[in-house]
Amino acid sequence: MVSPRWVVHLPFTASDLPTARRFAAALARSVTFLPEVDAGETTVSAEEEQGVRQRVFCDLPLPGGRRCVRRTDHDGPCSARPPR
Image (cartoon, rainbow, N blue to C red; front, side, top):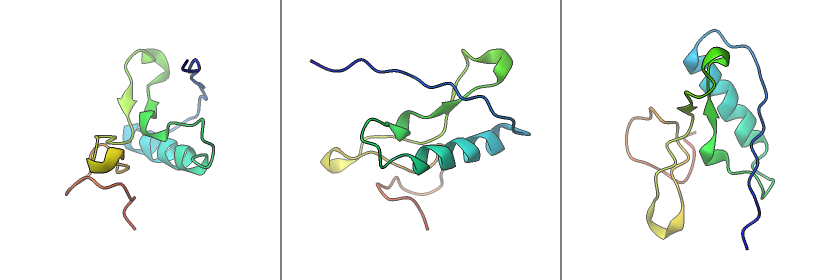
């Protein structure tokens, strides 16, 4: 049986969507050592439009069962490793 999933809502301020995505990406990556965290599903939304979520990571499936860890708007090919 699969455990139920929960979502944490942690409001923060950002000047625009790209800044919000960068903050969310840094926060998500900082807790990836926890096996319960699915960082690839990270989204952000404007406070007044919480039903309209913007993805932070590409998260497309890759060969071998891994997923792309690059940002949604990345250039070039998908990768299982973040760019340096």
